[in-house]
Amino acid sequence: MRLATWNVNSLNVRLPHVLQWLNEQRGDAPIDVVGIQETKLTDEKFPHAELLEAGWHSAWHGQKTYNGVCLISREPMTDIVKGIPGFDDEQARVIAGTTADGVRVINAYVVNGKAVGDEKFDYKLRWFSALTDYVTETLAEHEQVAVVGDYNIAPTAEDTHDPEVWEGKILCSPQERGALQKLLDRGLTDAFTLFDAPEQRFTWWDYRAAGFRRNLGLRIDHLLLSDALKARCTGFEIDREPRTWERPSDHTPVICTFE
DNA sequence: ATGGCAGGCTATGCCTGA
Image (cartoon, rainbow, N blue to C red; front, side):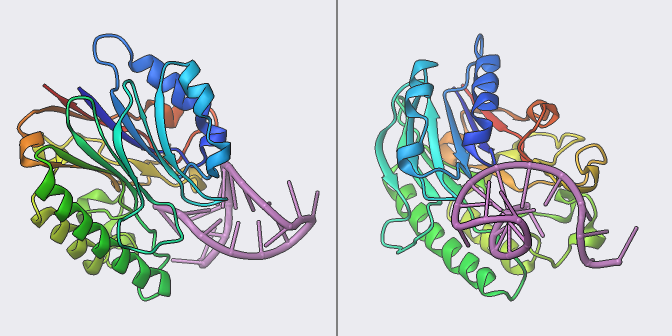
């Protein structure tokens, strides 16, 4: 089984890339589920029919202009839950579902936060705390859990292209890293840490100033695994290829393989 | 040098992103 996460920065613009990428992954090791963030689509505009025609099932949770998440899968997912239960949120940032073989997948687009101390930063921390409680409840109900998505948090200084620029700033503050650690402490492992760190570890590059060419990146997209799922994990890959395509998303897909 | 680029919309400039 292969599970992926990808912030596509508008599914309207990026649907051809998503279909091309899913198609290229077919064969020996096809993608079973990909959690997508920043669809930027209202529910009525979600390209459900186009995906189905291409052989993919989907579940979506969208809003106008901003945010929006979905799960695209080879087999239909079940028990779809949208948003964080019990957390009143106008922003469509979370969707969860269970795969055919019983893996509970929570797909999240974590709040950016704008700047440390900004009111959006406070919302980010409140929101992440609610996500942490939700994950804790999910771990009590399911053995195999994956919490995937765009976390908008670079876990360590090594996950930034230039710590001089990033340390202490948004995405890299002690508060955000502490919140991520608290989530991990509930019983999850960052799949990236299961294998030798690749030379290229970033998952996002700034559109500006030739960020990709100059490798001005961050590692902010993650797949966090419960112990039972971690035991099945045989591979981790950041696929930089779609970032090289014409008119790409600023994020690139991250994939976990399971036996 | 604190911007650059990209997407979406109240659109022909502004907001958000990371």
